[in-house]
Length: 153
Image 1 (cartoon, rainbow, N blue to C red):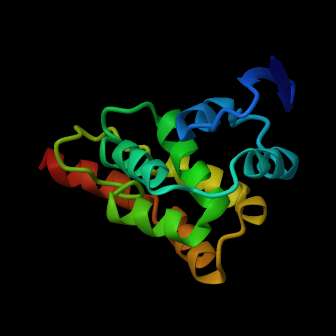
Image 2: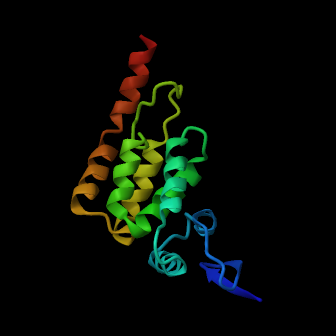
């Protein structure tokens, strides 16, 4: 038997009694439609974030240069559903919000991540400290152009 789970217009078939993998949960996230309703639906589908789930998310963050920017953002969101402040802490540790990433030929995605997370801060429930960090980092966009100009010299 299959139960149909509807998430913001998307239908996903999941076998009854099947434990939902974090990869499946990430695939269900529609970044354009992510809101409090989707947040609550995702959280009810998986009661806790297991160590295996954390390991998978950290692997996505570690390999952020190789992953699509959407997949990295979905990993941060999945982590933030259960542990919002730890999600930001780990993303910072992995260099997700750096405007200059050595060996990345100027292709940084920090602005994309910061813009999205700031726009969803109420839904994701970051602490005041992390909200302040995201805002300050977002306002330092000039660093990206500074680094590019410095490289040309």
